[in-house]
Length: 81
Image 1 (tube, rainbow, N blue to C red):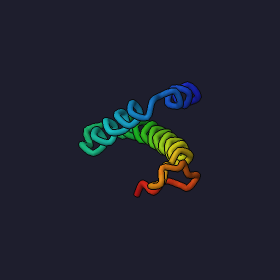
Image 2: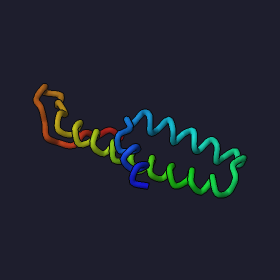
Image 3: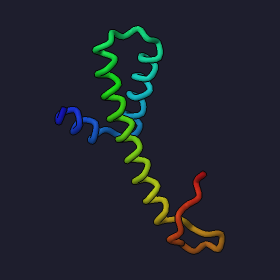
């Protein structure tokens, strides 16, 4: 599992998300054997956690560089909702 964790940790957000979407599609079709479904689900959970961490890091970076309407940089959190 350590190799898998290291592999996932080195993936870009886009690559991890694309693989996660593929896993979800396969699992939703229900055409995968039980044991393989469990392994795919575990990998999907790891990919989801990786994507969430990448998004959180990106949010923190954006928070640091928010420019206000007055043109001044602000340390206020960005409102991306």
